[in-house]
Image (cartoon, rainbow, N blue to C red; front, side):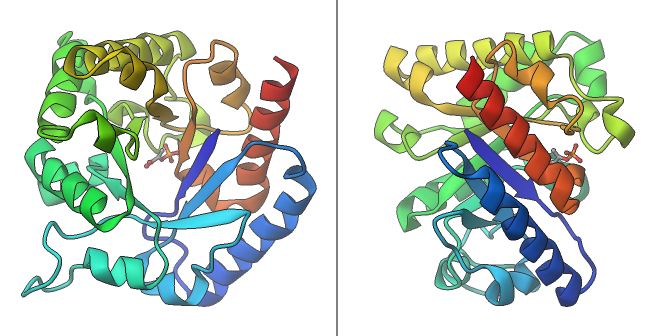
Length: 259
Ligand code: PEP
C-alpha cells in the first residue's frame, strides 16, 4: 500500500520540518516490521535538499515541477533539480494547482510525460469539484482527466504512474467531516479502472495503483479499507501530525494483514 504525505506549504520553518520527519521516522520504526508500506513524503521544495534523504523506509517526492526541464520560469522547480536532490515521485495536477494556478489536464499530460522520460513516478491527481458532482458530471470529468492527462502514454508508461482520486470537495476539511463516502470512492475507483480498460487493457486496468485522497484521518481510514477501494492514500492535513500519519499507516497495514 502507498501512503503519500503532501505537506503542501507547511511547516513554516526547516526546524519544524526536520522535527516532523524525525517524529515520523521514530514512530515508523515500530510499525514497519513486515508491513507492506510504501511511504512517500512530499515536503516543500525549498526544504528538499535538507530533509529528503531516502532510506528503505521513506522515499521523497516533489509537489510540482515545471513542464520544461530548464529555462526562464521564475519561481519554478525543474525536474532535473528535483532529481538531483533525490526526488523519486512527483505530484501532478493537484487540485490546488488547478484552482490557484490554472493548471489543466493538458499541462498534466506534459508533466507526466516529462516525469516518465526522466524517471520520476508521477502521482496524477484527478477528481471533480462540488459543482461538477452536484451537476452529475463526475463521470465526464474523470474521463476527460484520464483521457487527456494520459494521452500518448502507452501501457508501458502506465506501469510507472500512480493515480490519486481526490474529489476536490473532500480535500482539507476539518475533522474529516467532508471526506468522501467509502462507497463513493469504490464506485469511482471502479470507474477509473473501467476507463483504463477502455484506453489500455485489462492488465493495466487491474494493476494501476489507485489512491484515495481527501480528509483521510486515523478515524476514517478503516472505512476505506473495508471495501478494498484503493491501493493507499494521499494525505494532506493528517500528514502534518506524525502520530496521525503513522496511525493511518499502522491501521491500514494491520487491517490489510487481517483481511
Ligand atoms: C491533499 O491535498 O492532497 C489532501 C488529500 O489533503 P487533505 O488530506 O487535507 O484533505
